[in-house]
Amino acid sequence: MKAVTARRTSAALALRAGFDGSKVLPFSELPGPKWPVLGAMPTMMSYGFSQLGDYYRDMYKTYGVIVDGTIAGEPTVIVYDPREFRKVFQLEGKYPHSILQDGNWIFERANAKTGIPPSGISLQGEAWHKARQALQKDIFNVAAASSYCLPVTNAAETVMTSVKAKVKAGEEVDFHRTMVNAVADVFTAAMFGKSAGMSDGSASEESQAWIQGAMNITSLIVRLLFQPYLKIWPQASSSYRAYESELVKIHEATVKLVGDCLEAYKDFEGPDEDLPYVVRASRQNLIEPEKFLSEVRGIALAGVDTTYHVLLWNMLKLASFPEAQQRLREEVHEVLGPSAHFTRDKLSQMPYLKAVMRETHRHTPPGPLFTMRFLEQDVTLCGYNVPAGTRIIMSIEGLQNDPAIVDNPELYQPERFLPDAVEQRKGDPLGSLLDHKFLGTPFSFGARMCLGARLADMEIMTLMAKFVANFDLELPPGQTWDEKMTTLKSPDPIPRVNFIPRS
Image (cartoon, rainbow, N blue to C red):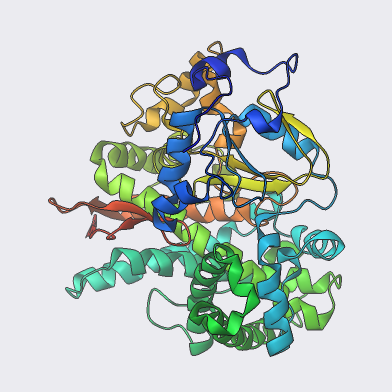
């Protein structure tokens, strides 16, 4: 590995000082693993995709707050300082490029082969912008997302009833499947006005295909994104062939589910906020009917897998730390009552629930990247000139586990994110970085942040509150697991969790 000749102040010192722009070093002097011709590729490949989080964390420990991650001649920089993220978002422009631009070949090839158009929110430029503007009105902001609180809460209650029935019947409650089904049921309640019925076994074939297809396709896209050479001959890849097959299945399911939903609400004349998302978006008439189905499919891909991973880690932490579980249960009972029935006005009254979610995201973030961008102009990041066209990776690994910034980072302590603790850190130039808003969400930021981020947060909060109110979550002893990237980071193997009804 090529020796690093750039300035080598520690990450903590660099973060404390900040970057005033008085001295800007060239991109060529960036520290990082610099193999001849291949750049950082051999180092990254030595970790493998399954341990990608370790790669980003170790790059921070070894090289500091900014790292040259260039891969085989494609300029790439990894940035860890959340204050520097802001510069990137300020310059991203009207049509920001996202990580999915590396996958355009996947969508274009599949469209040509199957005739199924790609979702506009996965594209770039004007096509993306038009789709985004049409779809975000009824879901993106807090008020719009919270309007689905009632159907989401009702669906969550049905999930609890189903899990209790399985426990009573002596059936083993599979942790992974329970989390997938729970997310599916609350998500479809918001999308279509009724739960898919995955938890109680009443789901139709179309609903099962829609949910499983969303999970499968997300995983396949991620695999293909990290194998760009496959675009030379996609059909030679089993992953690409599987992608085409799953695309056809989920599209057929989408046709059925959307058609049934629109038919069920065709004569509805009540307030719009009582309508499911699909009907609200359809009534806007901003998307051509033949493309609307692809947009609904795209929302499924974005709304199931990510939410599942975030919920999974939160529930595993609660099972692993009974004191945190009990404290959250007490807050749920105090604010929501024994039924844990959420209403829109209660969402802001749960500081410990939010602290649990934030600490889980710090302790085991579901993905090592906050987001990725390509800028069309040069930018100075962490004191280095980053040329236009460089792949800019903003990573949340490393900094959130740096003992110079976080006290006892190996410990799981939601209390560190309660309002009083956050207030005490405000005068600390390093400690206060932990509370930067760009570190606090798994759903990215900027113009291309997750369309359903606020809805996903509400779904996760609702399910967490319901589960701790209805069950004691118990982690059987003797289990160990690694953290492994699939689409996002998962425990491997996924442990058993016992759900013990409280009444």
